[in-house]
Image (spheres, rainbow, N blue to C red):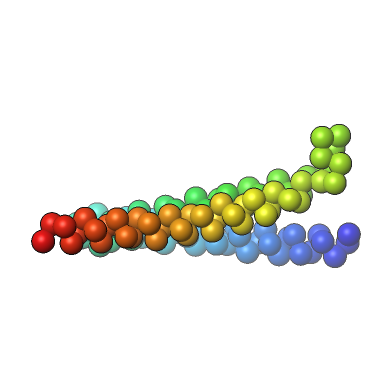
Length: 110
């Protein structure tokens, strides 16, 4: 049980860092789009929103999974991390779908 605390702190640090860096990268991409009016930068900036939301959800799941057991969850809340992994991987799938739709729109205009 004691080894879980440093591991949890390391996970919180890593996902917090990921969320901060992802937010900064997203802001830079939107600023670059604002300067250049490039549709490629807009597309990349919009994709960054998915990354930031996925990181925020992962942070929430790590915080939530650390709750102690209660009468409705006698074994704790640790299983929420599995659900979070499913949602985050689904966001990766959605990025692929969006990219495929984008390519279809671009090629249909030609």
